Amino acid sequence: MTDAQLNFPPDFIWGTATAAYQIEGAVNEDGRGPSIWDTFSHTPGKTHNGDTGDVACDHYHRWREDIALMRELNLNGYRFSIAWPRILPQGRGAVNQAGLDFYSRLVDGLLEAGITPFVTLYHWDLPQALQDEGEGWLRRGIVDDFAAYTDAVSRALGDRVKHWMTFNEMFVFCVQGYVTGEMAPGTAIMDPGRMTRAAHHALLAHGAAVRVLRANVPGAQVGLVNYLQAVEAASDSPEDQAAAQRYDGFLNRWYLDPVYTGHYPADMLELFGIFGPPVEPGDMEQISVPLDFQGVNFYERSIITAGDELPLLNVRYVRPPAERTAMNWEVYPPALYDVLLRVHRDYRPPAIYITESGAAFDDEIAPDGQVHDERRVAYLRGYFQQAARALADGVPLKGYFVWSLLDNFEWAHGYSKRFGVIYTDYATQRRIIKDSGRYLAAVAAGRG
Image 1 (tube, rainbow, N blue to C red):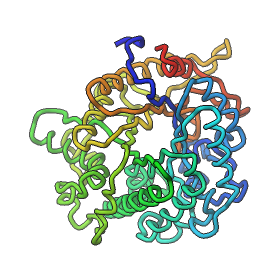
Image 2 (cartoon, helix red, strand yellow):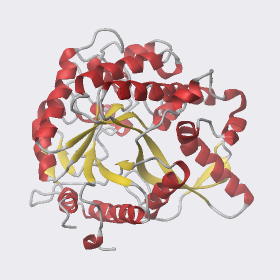
Image 3 (cartoon, one colour):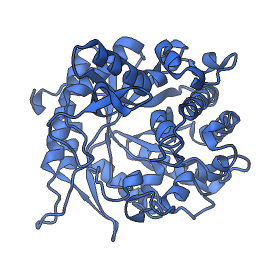
C-alpha cells in the first residue's frame, strides 16, 4: 500500500497526544499542588540524569505557539491530559480556579484553530496528598475523590469538550507504580495483590467518572485508554500457548474484560488466587457501564514462551532480530492491525481510536537546521498503512493520535528519549517540525 492508497474517511481524526506532566512545566505556578511524579522525579536515582518535569516543554506558557504548530501539521484533533493537582492541589476540597482557567483557555484556543479537544482525566500525575493517604490507588476511597475531580473538570469544560477519556494505561501505573517501582509512586513491593487492588479501584473510579461525565456533559463521548499488545506464542507447543495466554490475561484482558463483560478473566482469577481483587457487591456493574469508544495505545508486540523472566506468570520474552527504536521496542506494523482487529472482534466497542502510537529515535538537528528523522517517517508510514487496512476490514476506527506532539519528559527516561514529531531544544524551548511532522501534515491533509 502506498501513501496515495491510504484511504481514510473525511471525518477521520488526525491528531497528536501529550500528557500534562510531560510537557507543561510550571509545577509551582498558579496554585498547582505536587504530584507523585514531582516527588518521584526529585528522588535521586529514579530518573535518567535526575531529570524532572519542572520545566519540560514549558507548554503552560507556550500553548499558543504549540496550537499554531498543530495547525501547521493540519491536525483536527489533540489529545491532552488534565493535571489533577492543578485542579485540586490536595486531591480533594477547594478547586483551584487558576488551574481550570488554564485548561479553559487551551480548549478555547484549540476550538478557534479548528482542532477538536480530546481530554484525558488521568495520565499518572496523582496528587501527592492522595498518595500519602492510604497509598493512592490502594485506598478504596480514592474512587470518590476521582469522581469529585471529574465533576469539577467536566462542569468547567463540558460545554465545549465532548470527547473524554477517563484513564490512560492502568496497566502501567498499577504494575510499574505499585509493584515493580519503575514508575511513580515507585513502590517496589513484589506483591501481585497490590496490582489487583490498585487496578480494581482504578476501574471503579473509571466507572464512577463515566456516570459523572454522562450527567454533566450533553452529548459526551466517553472512553477508556488501554496499553495493549499483540501477544504471540513463540511456538505451537502447549506450554508456550499457555504462557502467551497468561501474559495476554495479565496485560490485556485484565483491564478489558471487566469493562466489556462485567467479569475479570476466570483464568487470571485462578492464577492470582488469594491475591485477587477486592470485589464488593455492585462493583462490576459500575465498572462495566457502557462506553462510546475504546482508546488503543500501541507500541509493540510480545512473543512469549514459558520461563522464569516473570516468575508469577511463568513466562519469558522472546526477542527476535528486528529493527528497534531507541526504547529497544520492535518495529512490526502488522501487530497494530492484529490488536485493532482483536479489540473489535472480542469486545465490540462502538468506536476505536488509536490514542497513542509512535517511536523514539536519536534525533539531531542537521547542518541545514532541520531534523531529518527518516526512520520515524518510515515507522509512521508502516503503521498508518496497517490502520487503513484495519479500517478497510471493518474496524470502526475513528482517529489516530501520534505520540507525541513534542519531544518531552519521557517519564523515568527523562529527556533521553525523543518521541516527538516536533523537536524540542530544551535549553531554548525552540520547536522545529521534523520531517515526520511534515509527513503527518501531508497525510492529515489527505495528500499522502
